[in-house]
Image 1: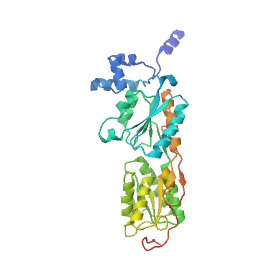
Image 2: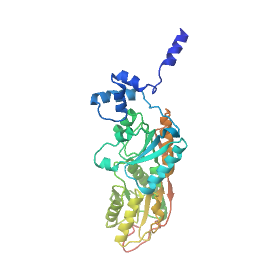
Image 3: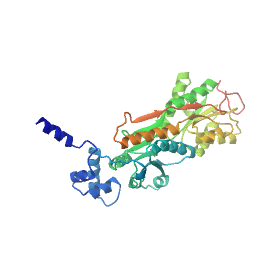
Image 4: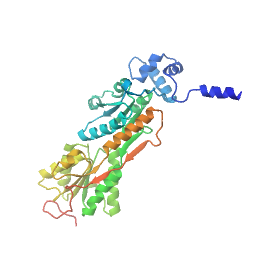
Length: 355
């Protein structure tokens, strides 16, 4: 009797081990229909699709992942905006891990599809990747569910919203902004402007909170008149920087949400006839390669993009192997890189010091 119980337990499938045929039988459909749902193909009624997706999630279906060069499978890295050096470093990190498993790395920029309101997950599922690293700010729970139903593990890089329990990898934006603001405070700045990213982004809120924490610790009141928010783009840094510099009592320093915004502030300062760092100190965030090329070189907070890509690849391959991560949010450390764009404030006829 005991032996019989043990035999039955051994024959019971573990969670995630059900085949497509078994899922089809449970759903009352044919295996090709389940396959269509898995790969985002048309020709399946909405109610049937929802029923199959629910069963796939319920039973933790995992597509078998063959490995080895003969299979030609790969990891997909999906971008919504490929900013040169950042995308390259992330790709290099992913590739280092993928090659150790004899996998290739592909990339897709879905910006045009997102702009046109077209789906981007379904075409990706048709390629049947081993896993997907999404460098897409707008990853949603709906996207997560599609990947889960398709049996393709997903890791998001620095998502704008909460996609828990999807694993995500980012950097310590709070402590990075804290270090940037402290650097300016230690130089003697007290009237410090801040340009954040879009208000709804988690990264923007984290960096703003770190900036405010530095001011609070130093006993410097946060002046909301010195805060602006907008997209992480050059032209917005230029326009928002110009707004700050034309205030009756402008800032002596500006902390930016990323390096492109900081370059925009450089242009705003040039148009206003101000010199960096003599008249205005500027700090960026990311440390893209151009930071060392501008004049003066930009002080910024470095994000470890190579390590972020490698970490995401390791997690997504572990998921493909049926493992579950011990934590769903991984944040890697940031580093303040001090260059020539920051200096102590000084009195001048164009920027009036508050003390």
